[in-house]
Image (cartoon, helix red, strand yellow):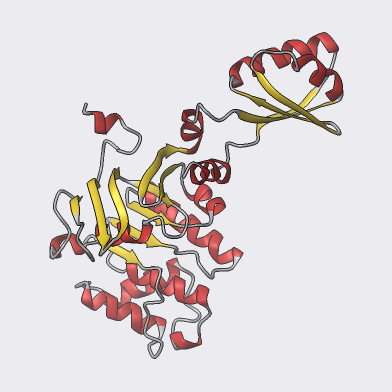
Length: 316
């Protein structure tokens, strides 16, 4: 097994590989020496505005070439390779739809461009998949932002692509639409499709996938599942919330522990900072037993995707 295969930035069954990729536009460096891969399932591509996410996605789909490094999709470079484009579906962040067409006409147009045999049948299938059947024969110019987003997703799915690249696909959707699209993307990932989702809404990414690729300032900042990324941040202490019927007694007992770096009491809640989560977990049970206290809550406060991402951006 190579070192790349062992790295959390790489997966063993990769369908998309990015090796030493950089992209610059004049003096502006948009992506700098990024190496990672994507495989079946859903992977979240995260980063603040200007992190290079959209530029990377455009290179993955062959829309632009890297300035350095290589991108391979299903073993070949995607630029000008028709056989690869037949297996890629793209939902761009831009509102790339024709307002004078209906959703059905737009999806039918995409089907014909993709060489789909059963155009009408497949159009019905993808419109149902994104819950657009009722509005399918209205002009896109009359649609809300969320409806246009779902129309773009339908068009990207029309040829049943093996690889689906989604750039901010949930923008403008309401909570019900978001929930449905998230469920759809998860189902596609579970069925063996490679789904790459770029989004700035961290809570939604966490609902879609456990694996993330995080970019900051055009560089790879972290990769893997959220808990593993947090564990790798050894320079940042864990923040833990404990609630008990004797919070003051527990807090007093833990203050002197060598692995505890800070204790703050707020009502029945104790907020602890520690570099050794395992020792805290072991000792809190003993201390509670000695005090005859009942612990009702014990959980890390900073293992969410939002917390991890905030740490990554702060390190810039």
